[in-house]
Length: 408
Image 1 (cartoon, helix red, strand yellow):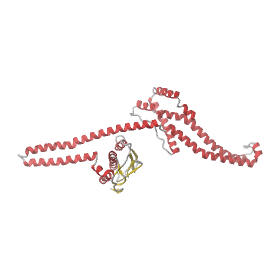
Image 2 (image 1 turned 90 degrees about the horizontal axis):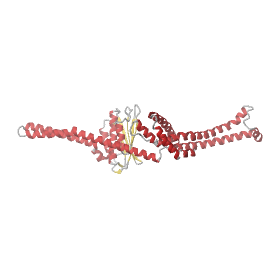
Image 3 (image 1 turned 180 degrees about the horizontal axis):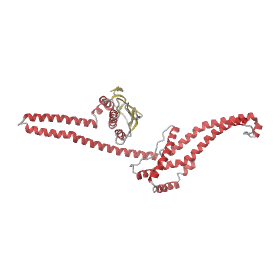
Image 4 (image 1 turned 30 degrees about the horizontal axis):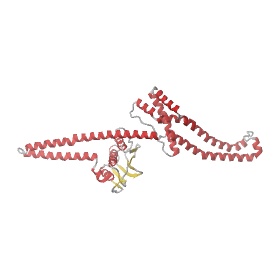
């Protein structure tokens, strides 16, 4: 097995690989992508098998294409080292997998055979499974004992060796199908690039939303306020009653403009979040929610302000979706901090069936958390319950701890 692996890493095979890339680039793109999908589905099954054997995850090391165009996808597949490692695994699995299976099955079959030899030799007359010379030297009774001893020894060997062979197979699969250090670095760079691009797009969209809300709301009311004050100034000497009415309208417009500005600021960074932290802000939101929300939080400190803001809006968006789309009557929020990660679980007993669609609310939450290397896991079967698990790596600062549990 080792010579096969060494053979696949020699310089001439690398030159052959480059020649294969040039040759494949002239082949029909759908055919190559289809064949690659089949190979990846096959190797992914072996990754899952290796994960089960080794009790540790064997992640998929594939790069993702920046676009959905076929030529870009083809270029990404051909440049991805994991593609060629998959093809190498097909050859290695055909050799090593067959050899390991033959060794294991041979030991087991031999143990069964030696167990059955004395019985078959007595039941079937004239078959003479035991050599005549051995039978004369040991006698029939002794030969049976030797056969049973051989059967037991082979079975014990199979019992002890089979798990080791399985682990050897799992290590081979992880070594070739798992991500290398270079692949991990490439995946990390790609994830950071995508996260940065999504963060920039999200911030640009947020700035446009703020500009639109200011233009259509507070700005329009402030313009009307200025016009009313100007008209009231002109009418103050000639028609005090009309001027008084304009001043009353101006006062009302100023209140409405102030309320809109406060709502806008609350949407950017709620004051309660700055004053009371993540726990207090979530509890305050839960009190205003139409759902009966049970909040259970045990945080020894406060996350950094950007993480705190992202987590708060993620919880707020999730609870809003539960009330608006999930038709839930109650929900729960759990917040914990362990192993350097802020973990938030939001669930509801709504109708379920939630999915992460591009451009949807949950997709926006996932992008918001991805900016901090956070993750979002959704479980939402038809009929509920819907459970969303969000994790964000961060460090907590010391701060006042609010009560750990309660129902809003």
